[in-house]
Image 1 (cartoon, rainbow, N blue to C red):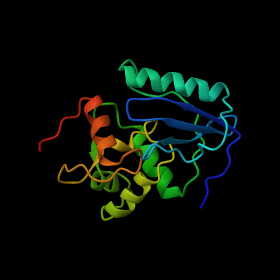
Image 2: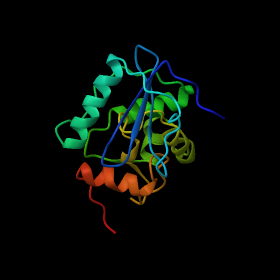
Image 3: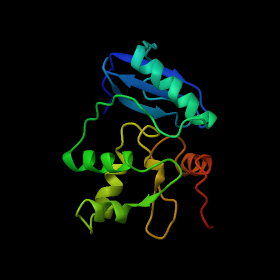
Image 4: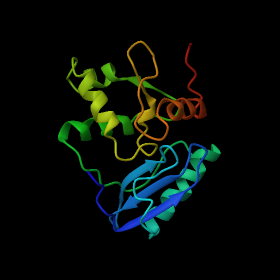
Length: 166
């Protein structure tokens, strides 16, 4: 399935690869990190707007280590459960982590670890909503659907000072 063509599109470089941001004009609708050097909408020309320019600025600050949270308008399409998981992730501060199981417990669904994992993986705005901060119950670093997967997730965790035992 091809992604929808956004009204506005911007790209920026980062330490974890090129980043592509889309906007509906009022808010950020998606963020993609290059996988194998490619972005989902790379064939389209950039068409930035003020929201995207602010997002690029805030991402630059995040990567420079001077920003620990994002203040950007978001329009996120997802199920009620996905939006509940993403809302929980937005409350998780820079430098802290949680587990899929803990999120399930907090949402009143203690056996929903797999469903939480699916919602985390469907996050349309990784980085802005810190889905990289979610680990397995045993503390293992498991899948990451953005960028180069676990390598990208490990970089982001280290960037935020989250150190894990081997």
